[in-house]
Length: 399
Image (cartoon, rainbow, N blue to C red):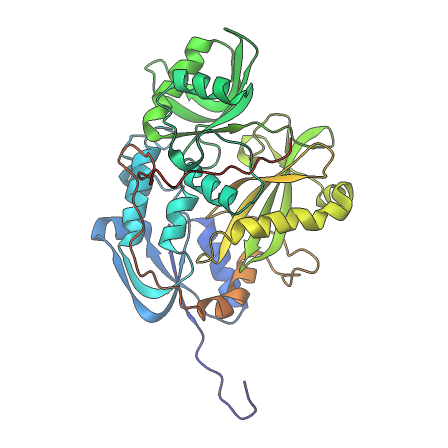
């Protein structure tokens, strides 16, 4: 601002979210601390019930997770009970329809990016095509159908994989994830938070359990398959303090700004499943001169989604902390309360929300207005059909 000029009006922030969620409170605290007022909140429930929402041209629109709300979850997934695992395919199609019904405003989350971010098969394929290191996957791009446990067994055998992660294509927070190990005919073990009830319904549990009966594992996978499945090699991960470790790296406007180490005694490091935050300084020391390469991998992954201001990248460090692969990219992966920016990131002293607010001014100059609807998946959660000439190329991460 030049001398003598009056300061312009503060930005008009709007958050599409579940208003009583702590995410909204944390973001509002950041806008207020930055002198940018309190954001207007548009409830996901109202968007779903009203068939959309209109924003003013000068409103900056930020989408936040529709999770942790029983009413919203019920409308999106169409199943009873917030702990149920099934319904993620319908959730995906309905969520993209909901995002497509938002009209106007200056958007920080591109609908076409979201369509890929929330399909692990499409996301894996996009990363691989950009030469981002990812675990090898026989289902990358969604062109190999996985209709049940028999198909999982077949793709594992064809790819020579004895240890894989089987994931819901549209899952989040480890919902429906199975870490599968095989050792010959009839010898199989699956580690998962999925609990199978007596009536065959699947529920998310806060307790990680191990199944060794192949018939029971097959029943779980067969129940998940209609929602769409993604299979990828289970890469051996580095350890920290005797526990398996990975990293969540938040990338804002193309720059890695925040990182946290997650450690666990199980293959699932999610904090709500018994994982815990590890010592980031110790991880950086173990990575040594490869730390910059780790952050670079996260930034390259985020660059695959240029219309989205912020993503959370899950990095898988190989044993020895010398090589890294990208496990997942999360559209709403910024909930890291109390964590401030990495040294040299430009976000020192800022939490993940304050960093996004600081970066939004330059990001919105690109005028990220959705000019086309997001491609909606099939009702069963499978990927849109691909051209036969558009074959996937998988970048194999070093084990």
